[in-house]
Amino acid sequence: YIPTSRQRTTSVLTHLSQTLFAVLSAPEVRLERLVPAIWWTWLHLLQFCVSNQTMDPEEDAANKPWRPIPARKISLEAARALRWLLLPVCLIQSVVYGVPWQGLSLAVAFLAHNEFDLGSHWVIRNLCNSWGYASFNAGAIAIASAGVYLVAEPQLYRSNLVPSRSTWAHARRSDHYVLWLQCLDYLQHYSCS
Image 1 (cartoon, rainbow, N blue to C red):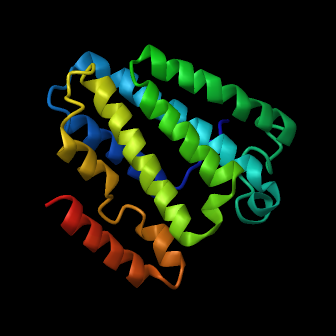
Image 2: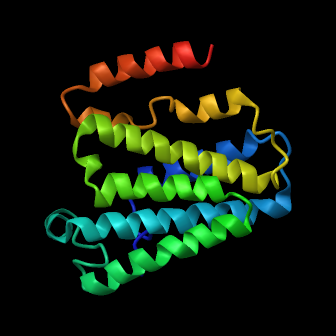
């Protein structure tokens, strides 16, 4: 029983499709690198989930009692220890796979979103989510293509940095989703043209 095992179907499909599209957008995909790309993505997703689930266990107990901490599959102290153990493990894994900056970027995004509680405001939460998706995509691309893509290819990063409404569910929960959609359209028009 792991923290990522009962993610909502939409969340799992989003991460799977983001990784798949990132890998498919790589200039040269090597099939033997597909499993390491998926492993790297899942390991970092585990890091985020453990971090997120240790932040407010009372909320999870009320709203998501099947998660490991409220279901008493793991204690809060053990989950926090796992969270901080996963940080160097993910960074080392990123160095081994040749994507140290993408791993560091994800670690900073997770810290900003969870530990620094910047995910509590809808604008900052969506910026952290976009940042995370871009980092996941950049890491998956680099691993799947064995580093064969060009860092100087700005369109590759622009397409990953501006999510096409991937954070719609988060924005919709607030009363400001129309503003968020207008911002996305503006960013896509001016950053990808």
